[in-house]
Amino acid sequence: MNEMIIEVNPPYNFDRVLERLSLDPLNCVNQEERWVKIPYYGEQDEVITVQALGDTDHPKFKILFSENTKQEVQSEHIHHIFKWDTALSDIQAHFLGTDLKPIFEQHLGTPLVLEFNPYASIIKSIIHQQLNLSFAHTLTKRFVEKYGRNKDGVWFYPRPEEAAKIPVEDLRELQFSQRKAEYVIGVSEKVASGELDLEELSKKSDEEVIKELVKIRGIGPWTAENFLLFALGRPNLFPKADIGIQNAVKKIYEMDRKPTIEELEKWSVSWHPYLSYASLYLWRSIE
Image 1: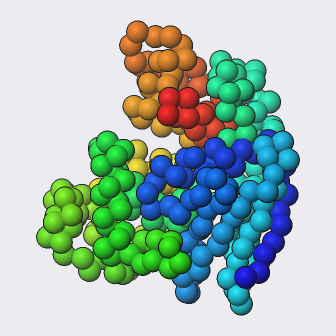
Image 2 (image 1 turned 135 degrees about the horizontal axis):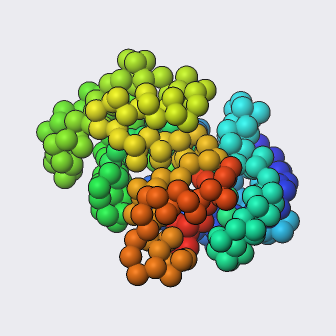
C-alpha cells in the first residue's frame, strides 16, 4: 500500500463526517479507529482508505492507496470528496454573525462531504425520493448488493450500462415501486448513452444544472438540488421545500408551525453565499 499524510486547515471535525457516513449501511466505516474506505470508480475499481490522525483543531489524515495506482489523481478526488480545500474557518466566522450562530458553535468544523460518485449520487437520490430514511437505505442496499460490486469489503454501485439493462420486474421484486424502478433504469440509460453527461453537467451553473436535470423523467427540483449539493458540492444551495430544513428552522425560531417559503427566503438572505452550509448545519441540528 502507498500512503500519503495530509494536513488540513482547521476547524475540521472528521468524527462528525464518520458519524454521518455511518448512517448509510453501504459505507465501510470504523468510527473507533476513525477511518472510512472509499470506492474509487476508475478504469478499475480501487479502494482508498482515509484515516484521521489529528483532531478538529489540528486535522491530519493518512490516505492509503492501492499499489501502482494513479495516486495524484486519486488524491485530488479525495480532497474534493471531503472538501479539504474549503476554508471552514471563514464559513464559521460568517455564521457567527447570523441567527444560526448557536448551531454553528455546537457543530463546529462540520464539513460538506460529497457522495463518492456522481452517478451513484443521483441514483441514490432517486431511490430515496418520498421514502423514510430507514427504508430508503434498505432499498438502496438491496439494489447495490444485487447489482453492484464488492471489493475489499467496499460496495460499488452498478455501472450505468449495467443498471440500464435491469428489467423493471426485477426491481419490483426488491420492493421498488413501478415508477421508481422505471426512473432508475431510465436515468441509467441516459447516462450510459451519453445523453446525460454528468461530467459536462458539473461545469454548468446551478440554474443550468437544475434546468437540465428536471427535464428527465423521475428527477424533480429536490433531486436536482441534492445532486448539486452532494455530488457537485456547490456552496450556495438551500432546498427550502425540504421537510428537514423546515423542521430545523421551526425549532431554531421556536415556531408553533412550519415556516413559509417566504419566511425562509427572508431569513436566509444573511446566510449567502454559504447556503449549503446553512442547510447542512440545519439538518445536523435535528439529527
